[in-house]
Length: 216
Image 1: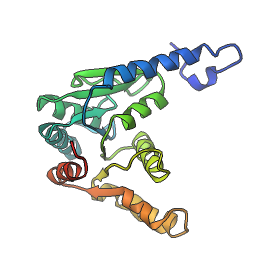
Image 2: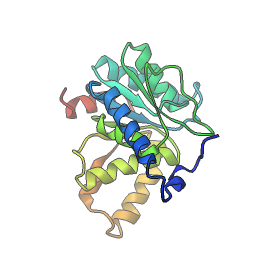
Image 3: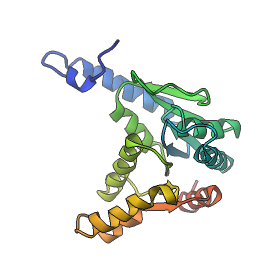
Image 4: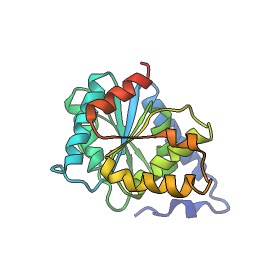
């Protein structure tokens, strides 16, 4: 098996790996440069097809496609599968940015445009570079990583502001309360930073919110 801990491979004399990194960037850009308006959807790989959030994700992805957006996911199971499935079954472009992992990640069969990555950071660049909005479904550490990466980039003005929609008020309410009480309450963020995030539940409202803010 190829070395799992890739960051540990950068040793003296192994700078040639930078060419592999450059190659992944080139593959990503060449594959997605003509994608057009797209929305990145994130969420847990562990959510089953019968879960209400899986079904809701399908509806959101389908609604986005019907409004001329492509859908980008991490290409795996659970919420990612639901988003790719909703997009593909609605006749749209369904992008899966698959990460090669020894556990948990298996590509779902619903992405009709798939790119494989060895490096998380390159994959994350593709998510944010080609998205006009983020939809954050319930998820774990990986989902939180993508969420707060985008929040930080918007807050620090490294990227243009775009809709960051967290889906599931029951799921996210505790986190939002903590952000308000601790981060804002102790002066670690500014009041306007809260405007970066939105919490919505209805698929139609989510699609309409993106449509209003994002001009195609």
